[in-house]
Length: 282
Ligand SMILES: [Zn+2]
Ligand SMILES: [Zn+2]
Image (cartoon, rainbow, N blue to C red):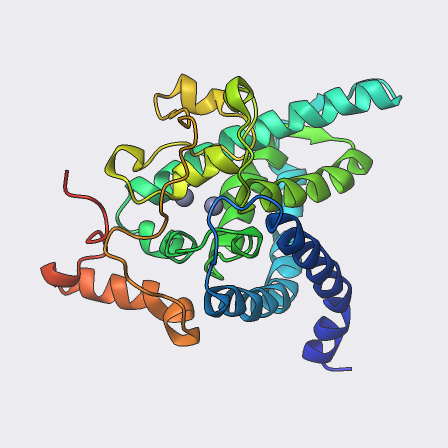
């Protein structure tokens, strides 16, 4: 079997799983949407793009992990994180891992927003005008390979985790991503300071200038509190989302190639279409 056929066969399970999660998510969103009448054109684009990303990640991520794992194994500090067996302790173990993961994720995410040469890659995720459960995997295809090296490699070098915990942790991380992107009017109130929810993450996607470069954490807003980027969602605050420039990246060529176009223009010193031109000026 060719590599492509094997990959397609291997991605059938994640494709089906994601299809079920998105179908259930879209149904739940109808109960109490933060934003009504989101265009089906936007959702349709995300569904097609997510299918492409799952297949591409199936091709790219396993060899990258295979390359990364011996480096982590042979050169790491490997501080053991091993709590006793038993459900209670395993939950603690998972929470510790989430906290470690989120620390690295926070700084990569913050760098993606503040370093002009990284922003073009993250722009696709933020060009979403209708944040909903289908936005979760709407990331540029180079973002996940970068995360393997910038988030997973340092964690693998520094810590030693039980593999069994890692398996269900990665599932939980994925599911939390769907939850925080849900188009749901679900205020968590004071709990927003402890755990990321859909309203809190919507602030991260907001086009309002006061929300720019805020709320970076994936799970624990405490990192935003600690590092000065926390914004607490106001009562009934569900701002519009997207890029300040309102650039539309909902097209296959734009989604896949826009960072290369932005980098090329920045290299040429093309001020009018500088890679940072969708950042607010105030
Ligand atoms: Zn972001
Ligand atoms: Zn997001």
